[in-house]
Length: 561
Image (cartoon, rainbow, N blue to C red):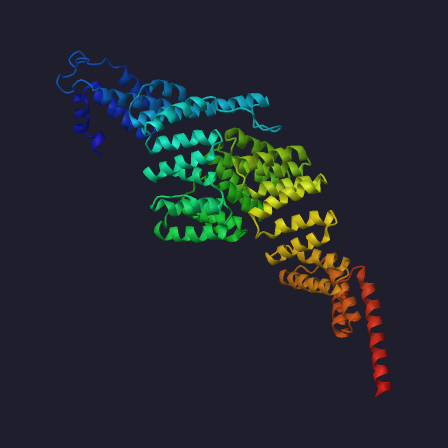
């Protein structure tokens, strides 16, 4: 290590203070020693201009007078040191009048973050609890946006913005609700500096639909492949996203990012085993990774793997107790245990750490539904869709909440939003059908259940409900068809017990007897007898009736013979 060798230390002592401090700021910053870096940067800027080296006890002639550009660079070093310790306004003040592109960007970004911090503080003060808002949408905004917009627009008019400044301009325009202008600024940013990934993700958020993305004039660069995959995943086009990410994986086989995105896409498609294997592989290679661990905990929750979820929660706490992802994992664990109040506490804690942490809002909404606190549930879900209008779970949650409140037309509105985002998800269609059924719109309910059945309704709700609806409509042939399909599905999954199965067997036995299909009717009756239950006596009576009818047919045939 040359930096720690005797020769390196000798060279360091021969440096002028100015050169030594510049070198110290760089080395300290690289090593994450932010407080020491800040101290060194302050001494660098505090050094007298043109200070004679001999007065500082150093040989003369080693450090010529610092140029204006070098002084500007020193100020950038100091501002970056302030920025690293979250002193944003101090960083911006240090950089007033700076001419370098890096310095100007850092000043604008510091002002933007200072305004965002104050906005969050005002929102908490408005709420009065110090936590995330739970009653109404916050009315506060970033007060520094007009100043930033004026400065950035003046620079843009003079053609003095580089790629990073265009990104900064896009952030301001997005917050000012000018998505078209923000999109144009982002396109300029990614064209000039394609590896600015934050610009790509913001571009995807501003253009959520496939048609919008197709219209964008993107640079001819390999990062576009990552962008298209990300945009597909955000738009819930999960099968397409998997194709794109699997192609990327051929070139980036060791990318944790690509592997995690693949796991998320499979989770969205409810391919829980494959998604779980993906997340576990990631954690095996990087046991201290917390990114997307909340999604992994959702899988363990759905699969009711309480022990694995408990182990994951303990691991996350040991890594970083105050990460939003950790709080969500703990919240899921308490929810699985039925401790919904405790679960809410941890989801709220996640939102104190990051008020825009989407999954915390959605999961908190689910907990409030369990606690029968419908007003809080609606508020949580609405915050979620404000953050990301593509979050189908929040739209679905709103539909469920309004259905609980017996406000069916509201519920239908939200379920339609969910089905538009997940047209291949049977659960969405079943939910919408349930609303139509309660509103006595039977034809619409039938159509929705048929869509659910075509989209692999794993729970078998659609087949059962279709059979009942067709029975109510007097179409016994269609009812029989769906009851038969329902029994096939239940046999396949080994779920033959239950009242619904007995109702189906009794209906089919009666239907077959009415149509002269006596052998098939006897078969259904025999199955009913095997199951037992109150329908057993009806099955026996039906069997006697079938045998009696068969004997009558036999005697009639004999007399005609």
